[in-house]
Image 1 (cartoon, rainbow, N blue to C red):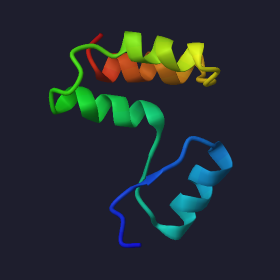
Image 2: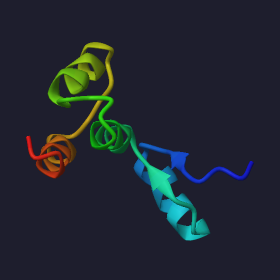
Image 3: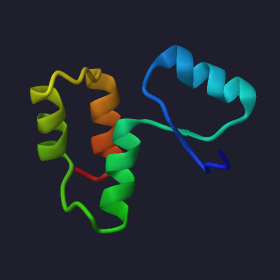
Image 4: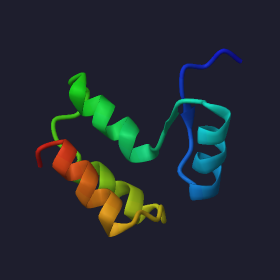
Length: 71
């Protein structure tokens, strides 16, 4: 497909993408990029929306994303 990135949140899938040498990004990575380019001012409300829709994120991953976002 010629994509620059593959969106992948599952650990096994991310591992396989790394084996293939493909760039990977998860859902929180997309939120971080959105903040970096000015599409979002803060990330926590978006994380809450994901939770409300049943999306499962580990506390460690959320804390890491928030730290990277300086939040």
